[in-house]
Length: 117
Image 1 (cartoon, rainbow, N blue to C red):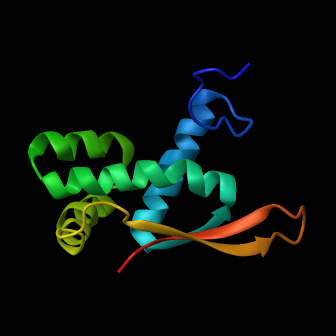
Image 2: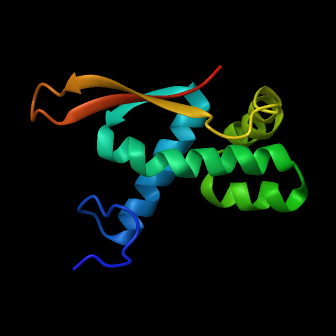
């Protein structure tokens, strides 16, 4: 039974899963969009939006909380300087998932998750 079990495991142990999500979110913030499977995109969407909300707060504690997830200093600066300004008037919904169709090798559903302009 899956009662009260939150989140997707994606057939990985917890350390591998945390590293995967951290890397995907960092690349999404760096490039503005990434192409990945639908399950991974849905798993990282909430994490990315939570980081942007932290960046909008802009205080030192928010920066330290975000630094736990984003290990690249350049991406962290971009998050707090550029992305926080871009979404200042927006109350959530900073990302969108676009379906691309099945992957050629294994027919996994591929999507593009992108930051909104």
